[in-house]
Length: 264
Image 1 (cartoon, helix red, strand yellow):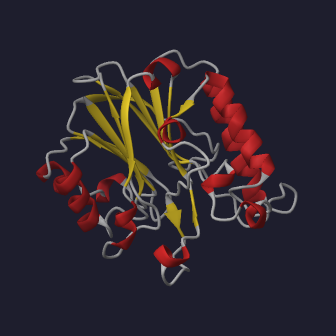
Image 2 (cartoon, rainbow, N blue to C red):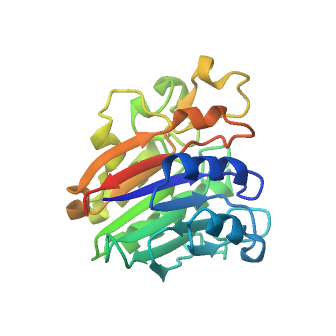
């Protein structure tokens, strides 16, 4: 069995205590982090190694964005795409060499897209759509058993958000974003593991805003984080979980970890 977790940690150095808590309690084989907000030279390598995660790939930058994959399983660096087309650190891919050998794990942080869902009025929104289109062209050529995970910053289904009607014109749930994400899915025939394990219309969220005083009572969540697999790899999924309790930990991220287990 191989287990993989994805988590937008919103600053790995600030939140290393809860990352350590998670790894001690749940011990996935591979952990993919987004929004690490640090350059590689300042990444907490030693803290991860002390926890048994000796294999580390980092694509970081100062203060913003950044992704990292840490693993108990040996891997090799496999890919590093600039889907943002401006040098931002938003993707890293690795290929597992131990258990699960040959499986590629792609870790991505899709831009949030600003506040106005209009390409002409909001440059960031256009950049987000273009990012996804570049991912789609890449997916057309994927020919390996691949798992792509991360913060996609889109909640595609009605049951992926706390109020479908109210959020239709809010960035992350607009029809144009959902359609663009669907084209990415179709390009490789990706299987949405989360929604194959937690069937719609069951509520399924991975993010709750810091603005909410009591995130649990209000429960105004969205499913912004995803784990998608190549068709053959998806057949080997044996479990998927969402650790909502992590949203209540000390100095939490606004996202929570998602974990998928494979029989490899």
